[in-house]
Image (tube, rainbow, N blue to C red; front, top):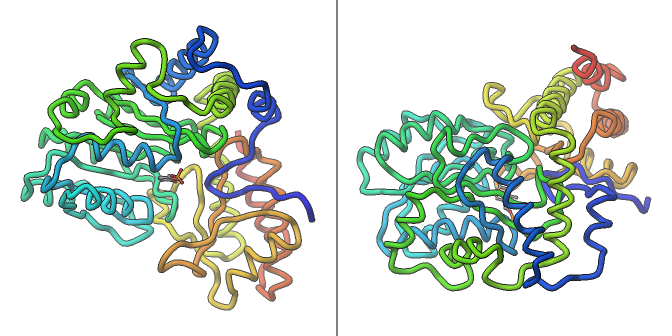
Length: 379
Ligand SMILES: *Cc1c(COP(=O)(O)O)cnc(C)c1O
């Protein structure tokens, strides 16, 4: 099997148009032609983030934007309230520590959503001026109630940093309405662009905080990016082919329409959940906070990760994501973000049924596919 179908939460498959855009001859990055490309990207990104703030684009994976968000606003000894409950939210804790900050964790069990009242409790007993949240926790398939957490953060006058890396472009992200001061995303997830670019939408309040901050690093000094943005450029050489790919991916998003795109993702998520339940598989995330871009499913006790993911890869060339850290081997995740269509998910579910059957798991043949079809047929 030479083909691999990516059904993981990033990187995702690229459209022919994006591949073509990346393969064109490289153009100079200090040219009016490239300035226009950047301006187009910034403009569309603002729409996807639903913000009037500047959105800077960094050459680096999503983590580079997380790193920048923290390094630009904290100093040694500063407390930062970090909402955790999965691999990516825990990354903020590590980043804070790496800059000498003091993380104050608001922890939930993996698979559960952050409780705003817990955030309030920790904030009320802390000197923290910064709160971090992972909007869509990709490792557990939980979509947190960002609006509710944002409200608590605002009540305490803190700066709200949100990782929206697996929600921008696939789900509703209301940067300005919620009051997200630094909202982050990455290219290889819902935007269906190549891996290697990260974005940060920064509020006026956060820019001021950065200007007052003593340390901010060099390459990821966001104030430099802002200064360049005013001149329609970037501070350092960006990855031109990746930016070309991003531009085309953003054009395709606008062509589909943001609302239509969000509703496609929601339909895929619901179909994935209904299919899992119909097959007798348990869902890992609290159903009240289920992600619309990735679905985490429990591996039955009688099966191993290889029975599910191994077979899917070997027999059908379909790549699913596994569990991380302590849920490794206990869950698998279907990424249904980016360009994934109903036909892709039906193919995956059909293959999944065959793998489960071969592994000796008993269920009614066709029940998963049928449950997904029912969701897709609803008007
Ligand atoms: C993928 C991802 C990231 C960043 O990962 P990179 O590998 O650095 O691009 C951060 N947060 C979440 C929620 C993610 O899914």
